[in-house]
Image (cartoon, rainbow, N blue to C red; front, side, top):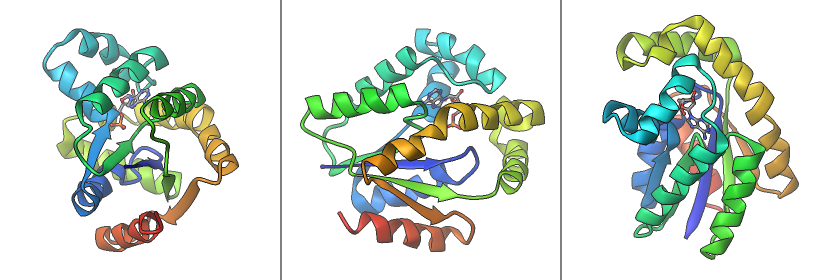
Length: 190
Ligand code: AMP
């Protein structure tokens, strides 16, 4: 089994690309953001805990996120591997993921990053906010908070995965198909 981490700032196109890659490589796509939103919509305990953070554009605490991710992995061991989208987002999450995958005889195969300029992405999110119905997409202050969270807590993961020789960056600007091709070139190596 392979385990691919799809990495990138908010709005970089992770979710869009994941839809193509999961089909192409028969992967279980786990978007922690989608799982949280599903739980908020269904008013579960997890949803109630996560909601206040998400609405402010802040990260949900590690312990809540890590527990949820493990459950999602354990429920979905029937495909050729995993595509993690929006996870890990902190060093603690990355370390927990390494330990957890090791405990089930897996490891992160590669981290593939979609690179794009911040200002392009903020505009893209505001545009998406017109139809996504996501409160955290509609307010520029909340979007900026999400970028601050990224810079402070998520960006250090680039070094973390480079140190393990697992970090691959592709240009995230282009047509959807072009970007899928760029990502596939990386994934095809494994
Ligand atoms: P996303 O759909 O990936 O943009 O995530 C939307 C929001 O869900 C984020 O702004 C966070 O509040 C929360 N979230 C998603 N994934 C994580 C994660 N791995 N760690 C903490 N919070 C997360």
